[in-house]
Image 1 (cartoon, rainbow, N blue to C red):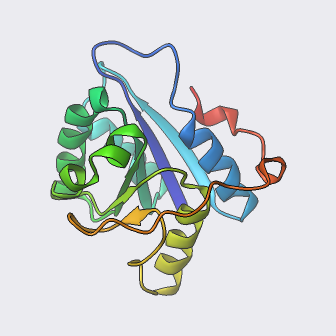
Image 2 (tube, rainbow, N blue to C red):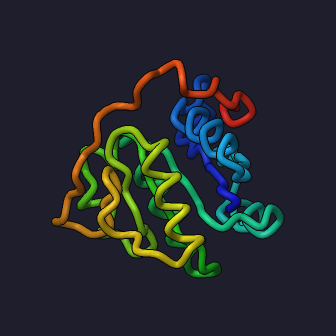
Length: 168
């Protein structure tokens, strides 16, 4: 599966990118999936992301979000889903602590709470095989139904080094 991670800038371009997509991308690539990245700067419009999705053939849109990024990301998801039928997964601090709010937004299909490497791989596998995407630890699919949370990834030495091309 091809996953497009989008970094959502707010008032200006951030000096530091979200690290989550770097670890997720490395893990997914190690398991045979394709990952690309797009920095949605303040100079971009929603159609730029839609065009990138179409150009890359992405099959899943991933957003790692802080609360500061949430409102702009919400508007982006609305615009994308009005034009494209692509599932959207959110992760990061805001979805972890406000999953019900995020999932109440039309167009957001999944919220990852906490670490996402193994849950995202499990979700992608279920999606590719037409299996059940509900009940995956750390992945919430609807408001009011928090998932079970898995233990942190161990041993850390088994985690691939960050995919630095998605940190920019």
